[in-house]
Image 1 (tube, protein in one colour):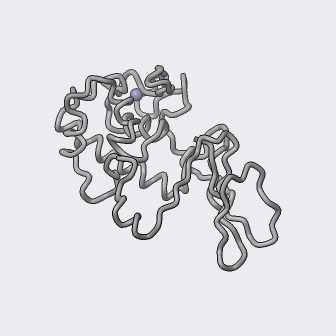
Image 2 (tube, rainbow, N blue to C red):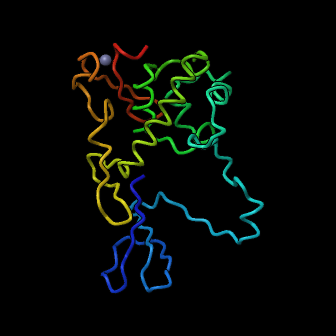
Length: 200
Ligand SMILES: [Zn+2]
């Protein structure tokens, strides 16, 4: 949340709020800049790296080949919480935050307040596909620099996925599909954005 990994060429002025510096062979640096101190860094030896495959018990990586709709549905079964909250849980799926859950739920036509356990096989198929599509597009766009402009690439430039957002941070603006105003709801302490007509 709002931290940055920034490349610093040799001789360039230092970034403020730098918490970790990785010195590269040519004198340049990779800097972890984190004004709000939400970030954490861990250092493992090579041997530990081999054994600590998943030290934080993160859920499956959605862009892995093994991530199937069946696997997604399995992780949702028995969970009564809203689908949006369950997708934000890093132990269920790794790497999905507020932006990408909003966009993936919109694309798959699923209301963010639906109980996770009510997602059908066909919906899980759409959702798994949307999650992967949204992530791949966002990576191609080099990320999403939302209104706060906190997210930048390692070169300090803005990403461009914010130009393709359908619902995230578009409250009261027309849904690109049906024109209904985009609604919001507080879910798991975050603001969810959705179309009340297209998402059921
Ligand atoms: Zn709509």
